[in-house]
Length: 294
Image (tube, rainbow, N blue to C red):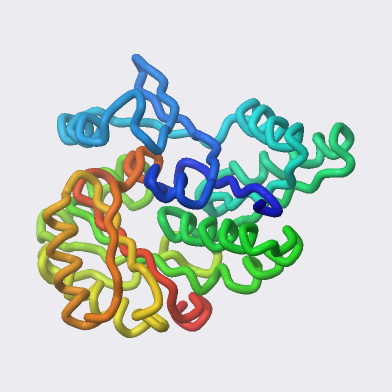
């Protein structure tokens, strides 16, 4: 029997089959329009991924929110009531306040469950890189490792989880306040594609600009091939925001440089997608520490 439970949140973008395989739970964040509020289900229960991104292409702007305090409290209580310790692999604190809210709820629940332990980890990343950390935690639990051993491992290794992104358009980043309006205008006008990574503070850091979509694939492949560690022993996860065939092209480009790696694809979830927009591509992998790159 696993020695503790692993929970992540909506920004992990973990497919259902992976969550089932490793018995990983998650806290749902929220997104909304002026007309309707949605739970950010990783299974797209209320709104399909295609409809979500089609809405954005048609001018709908979604707002997003962190994991509600009530959601954190209810789900943690259910695990603790089952006499299970919990490790929560949270979205980077630079991108979401969810982990800070979780600290508060954890401390409140200590009095109610004095014999149980809740560990809240600021992953300093999001997307499937966050999910990859959760997978390793689930493996350690299945191996009988203690929650303290797991916490120590994650804190020592989380900077080795890397992410590299590019975007179809800068419009959505501008709407979300991630870049200036003038940068978005000139970027779109001249077909500039930014290359963004997650830095040591868990923030999104621009590390380059290329002209044209195809050039962005080549630049991502170059960066990944330079920084990946033991590619033959890991899975490279490619996320796409309703642009599967673009993800296929990106995979083929990376395979030229890293032929021995295993690749899997997933759909970028609603929380990340609301800011990044349709056409976004995200590559997640284990590599050199982010401290060596930034």
